[in-house]
Image (cartoon, rainbow, N blue to C red; front, top):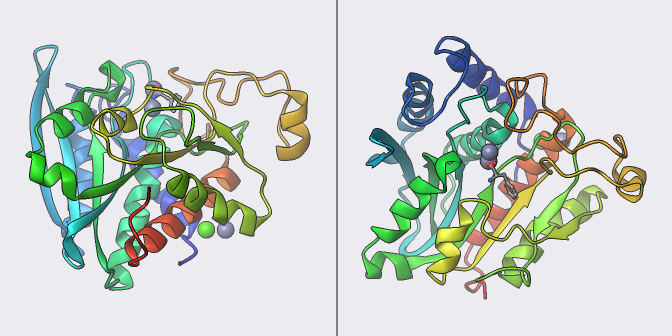
Length: 288
Ligand code: PHE
Ligand code: CA
Ligand code: ZN
Ligand code: ZN
Ligand code: ZN
């Protein structure tokens, strides 16, 4: 799998920051900064040959959208899906939460195109709306999938907060939640082992957009660098950073700007996403 240049991921984060700054300081559901974020990501994907679509929904009386992008090669009956939410809270620009996952997914998608990847399976990306209002967009997507389409999705991997400033390296546990997949857990652990970075398993429960996929019986996995929880001294010893401080002290706050990113964590997680997308789409048996 390719090494994703973190400079390119950061360039997308700079775009999200500019969008927020130019639109009242956020990229929240129902606000102009959300629509501008959608337009940026969709424009980049359309320019390199993705099949993209917007799925419109309503939440709180305000219009929202999911952006779905498919790389038009590989077996359409075997879909590997990767996603994360593109909306921020209203309090701030949402650069770690979740510009980070959104930007890494975009750069991985652009790399699939630049390498003209010809995978055995179909690769589909999702950027979800209104996660911050209660997982609205991803739930709408899963609930509106025709059952035949739902059964074509063999895996969903989720990326929500992957550049936390006081980062931990968490992989969604296969055993902690519905539809947790050991194969996906191991596929997401493997690149960190190669990088020499220890990981911990975490049970994220229903706290992000994998939840609707899990409830539909689709195998799920994901990566996370931590939010409001405090880093322990044992964790600071193995990962560096500051014990006794939150993984992200700017979680859901106005200070979640481009200054609120650990570039090393963003780089490692971006490379791990690429590893997972390449590996899962390459034609190995479906994950269990
Ligand atoms: N979904 C949470 C948010 O956007 C963040 C989170 C992700 C928490 C994964 C736990 C696990 O605020
Ligand atoms: Ca990299
Ligand atoms: Zn959030
Ligand atoms: Zn989030
Ligand atoms: Zn690197």
